[in-house]
Amino acid sequence: MSDRIRLDDLTDADLDALYDQLDATYRERAHFVAHLASLHPSHIGHTDQNLPDWAVVTIETPAGQMSWHIAPRDMDLFTRVQPTNRICRGWDGHTTNEKYQRMRDLTEATPSLLPLDVIAEHQREHIKQLTARVAELEHAEQGDRAAAALDNSTIKAWHTRAEQAEAAIARVRKLATRWAILRTYGGAAYELRKALDEKPAETTPLVHQSTKPQASHSAGADEPAIDEQQPTTEADRA
Image 1: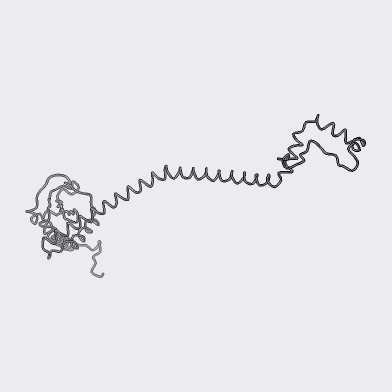
Image 2 (image 1 turned 90 degrees about the vertical axis):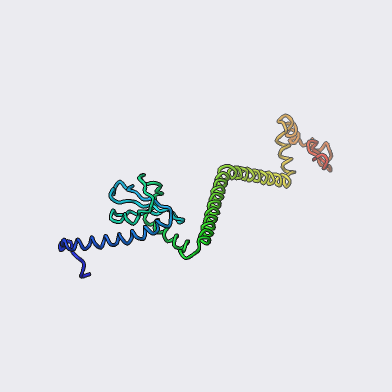
């Protein structure tokens, strides 16, 4: 790093040398771009309003569009490229990184030593793959839309029916429990319900008779008194 020139030490001769190196670098790049433009459809023109002195060459390759700025001194290399005066004619908005990624894709996809028919077949296969990928994405998008519609309508209906079924099951379990209790304690429940249904007018004489000792002797001392209000057989209980 000892050869690096400090800004304070920069002379006119040093500055001229730097410009010469820069021009040589741009010239070498221009040779490469001109060769690439001769292989693919391309056009060139002064389309950049920010750099009016520099032309822009746009090249349409199988791997995608590429473009470079060309210095005025290098325009002699692009005499066979179609000129254009339209501002940013057909530019797809690619960035520098995207441009050189397309360059890598181009060199990998179409080696210059392959016959044209092999290259054409490769391009057809590439188009087929892209078409299949587009169909796959469209199918996935349709599936997402169907899933969204299912979430918004059918699944909600399923949840509603499931909640209703759970509520019905809970009611059935509650009724089954009550039925089991009534089945077990049916006799006692019947007696209690019978007593609750009796009117006070019907119960008063029974209480009055129970306070008189002679009433119990009228039926005989050896036989228990029979309450006519109570069922005496299984048929009566039913």
